[in-house]
Length: 330
Image (cartoon, rainbow, N blue to C red):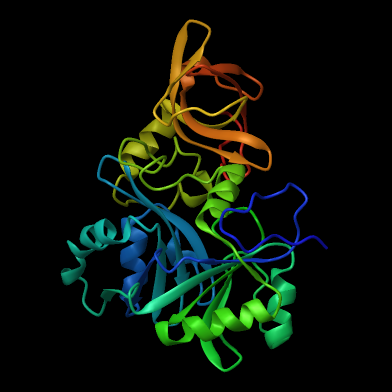
């Protein structure tokens, strides 16, 4: 079994195995208390959250009235509460947006508990083995977004299946006092520290859109390839009418694609196919698979896998990304 260096600047290899521990305490953790809170979140976002039972979760997108993206989040449902994981830069705008109508919902209280809690992601093929060494296997959630409260070496934490990427692993969060001892336990059990640079490499390989890059009010969740986080049958919610019309009349103007590049380029660079300007680059970085970019391509140019493009001075090829989902017709 190969292992990675714990240094944040270590370059990932395509054949790496093991378990990396990422500190995601800067990602938002919003806590909705009271049973009416789930219905409120359901009415404010794209996913059918009311279909979830305690111990389940789902990705959902919060949008503006014109369906621009506020954030891609994960909601974890409890008995009388919910946890909402947000992107690092998005928790304050999301709290502000959700707070506008919340005073009219009797019995629901929303709090930002990011500063009072920690958040970890344990990612990689050996992540389950790391947890088994600390708690056995019976309490470890197996289904995507399944979550429960557990004890790891006496530390009470929330444990959820899934990493926010396509790679296997878990999210863990709990009271801030448990952060240092839990990190030490996980490292002693075989995990290795991962850094921001490694996470960015994995994000680009998966094709996960990021806040302030692919996730902005300039784009909607259909364009961003977030169809699995959208219910087209749940009824009214903020931005629903705009999204429904785009689906019905096939008016999706652009879609997010991965681009295998033969060198680096600057985010914001125009993407060309022949003499046509077809889109713009939103992210780029060096990964174990070479330079990978993400960019929005206008649908009228019929983007498809293998399409040759020019990004600045660099040649590239469009590729589908494992995190992104689209209906078969696109």
